[in-house]
Amino acid sequence: MTELPGAIFDAAAPRPRRAEALEGPGKSVLRPAIVLLLMMTVLTGIIYPLVITGIAQVLFPAQAGGSVITRGGKPIGSRLIGQPFSSAGYFWSRPSATTPQPYNGLDSTGSNLGPLNPALIQAVKARIAALRAADPGNTAPIPVDLVTASASGLDPDISLAAAYYQAGRIARARHLSLATVRGLIAAHAHHPWLGLLGEPRVNVLELNLALDALKRPAAVK
Image (tube, rainbow, N blue to C red; front, side):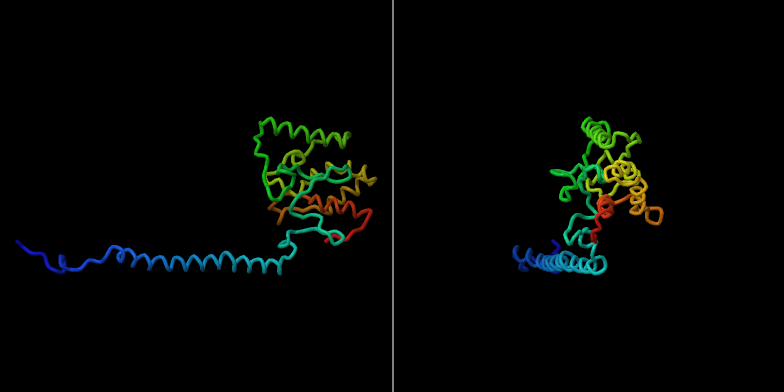
């Protein structure tokens, strides 16, 4: 019978205990994994946000602070979040489907209703009726953004068509000329960036503040 070389198999050689065999390689892998996790947590969870926030506060303080609009030293809204307006003397915002109240920044959402959903159809009809009731003599087509909510429910802007549609009602309510109101819209219009990106629009809150400033100048930042 041929014997196997001792280098290949040695029955008399001591074998490592099971616990030692498992602990050795495990420690060599676990330790760097934990160190890497802690390093990345500190780097990406603490250092990076602080650096980016600091840079933003220095270079873009207004935007970093939420683009808040103040009047008389008090915040009255943000350029980035819409507000509800229902008075005939103000421009109305695009509808919002957020809950529990419109333009809820903590619950940005659309209605998620399909175009054939009866609930959406009824909501659009109700908005059309409200616009017609507020301006009975206006027979122009109602821009779609005045009767439908956006996907975010927070839109601060309306299209120029939506603003011009409301100009006559506001002019009568405030005893202004139509040309004055239309000129105000044109002065606050935002056009596509580089003529390509975005749609012509106007910020509703800024426009309504400009309306108030026509009769009562106020410090707006």
